[in-house]
Image (cartoon, rainbow over all chains, first blue to last red; front, side):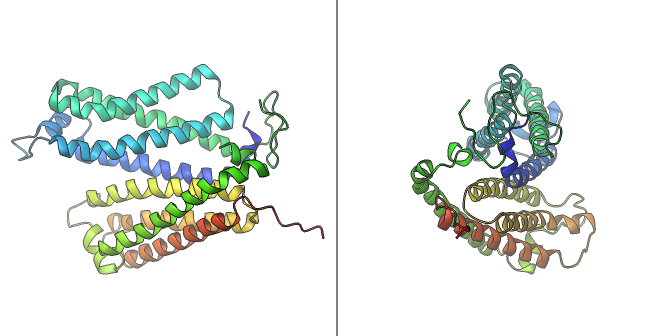
Length: 173
Length: 162
């Protein structure tokens, strides 16, 4: 099932998967510590809180976080999904479905902060759901990536695939 | 991706200029990263303790530590993937390639995770020199990998059959 050419890239891909796992884990801790996982905390984070002496988030402050994430998150998703698709020759429908959920959660997660602050504070649960959905689907992608790196014993090559770990295929699929 | 999985000479010729430009920027990134840490005082044990050591009562360490690991792991991940994947198609012995990548990855993990030692065990001695040493080793291994890829990418493998 796994493309045999993946074997040559196992070390850099394993290093990448390890670092992405760290990024996701630290992202979860930062979300929990700075924003929180219930609607009240999320609203207080974006709209400010008199009790906590916290001012509302400014547009500049929101953009300071959103802009790097608008580069980093799509780049991370593009590379991770590309590697999984390359490794497994993923079937179109399940791959697209999971990828769509991940992209949707990423977009909702980044956009929800602006919506809560400037449009409708009651969207706070969407922010939490998008973050949890993003983390869960990224965990699934990382597990798939790790599965692609496991030893290939007992696996059959993909039908019609002519490449090996050391040589390119004789004909492109 | 095509030149990585189907590295024919013609494809490699076309890929060489953008790959070398990317690697030049990777060197700038690494040098900039070292300079940034130096400017923040993070290359001395005292400076590092001031920035990242948890204050009394800070059970999970400062937020700045988690943010730094969040960003650092992203940078390390992409550098290791891109430079490591380029080295796969360079005529470099697997031992050298895997050795450089393994050292860089291990050192990067120590660099990122060493500041959590005083969070888990308050007063843990020596974490700051450990982190500085690991950062130095990670940077040296990554710079060596980048230079090796720059020099060898697209070259014909050396013939060993006489």
